[in-house]
Length: 360
Image 1 (cartoon, helix red, strand yellow):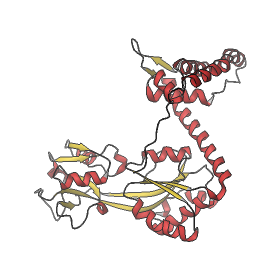
Image 2 (image 1 turned 90 degrees about the horizontal axis):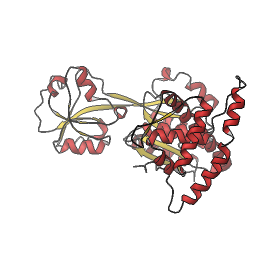
Image 3 (image 1 turned 60 degrees about the vertical axis):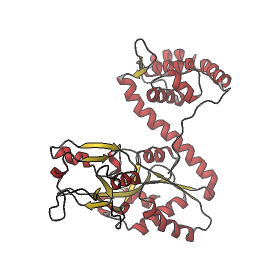
Image 4 (image 1 turned 180 degrees about the vertical axis):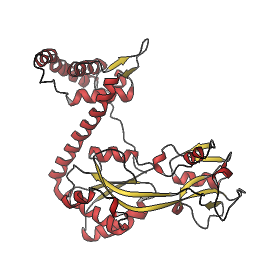
């Protein structure tokens, strides 16, 4: 499993550096009121939002604390407070509110609006740095790929074999994730070149190719006596039965959602996004779960599988990338090989992606 994204923290002894940085910020931010006053005299001009101030807003929003945000960014608490104050002057409105009687803070409605733009702007800045680094490395840099669990061994195994035949010595760094939500952030930031995830994609600067359909099944402990109707299980027959659910419903079809739509409140006794953990819990008799068919061994006598009546248990998996980033020739070639190996499905749904491919 891929190493989780680590938060940046200050090392022991870094307080002096943080104070020096804070002093530099005071010198820089002290000019802001004059600039703001000058800008307010010219309605057509607005004070710019500086990236470090936007980064402070994002950190405060995520941590709910000036102190913790400062620790993550390598600043003292007072420096973060000044950066937010400067950002509020540039925005012309209050962005952060302190909770009465406590140290916790939260964003105002204006702060929430700006937060969305701040995250996108900072992601673009990170992506720009990644493009410049890639340009400097030329063809020596690795192609970085992130994949949703259960997909990597099916898609990448054959694709990487072909890729290495065509590009001997080329490097591919692949990481597997239990859910695909981190992949979108990493691709948007330029920290991954390609991602394999469930469709449809969330909103973002992404282009995609649909690759394959994954068939899911209802997996139950083999000793359960659930009625079958022509080999199919009906949702009402699962009422009250212990279920194993997921934290992130993007990782596959939602059994909970299907039950609620049928008027039954699901009895979830355990949650995990890791397919192998779910399979083990089903085998141990803890409950039933929806799993990719390929993750359940046909000879496993501890698990019984069945389709659900009137429920489409399929998931489209696709390859996606940042449509505004410069992909290296190696990444473009690997993208093409993955498509060749899988066989592109539903080409009519590609939309504008075909034009993006031709331009890439």
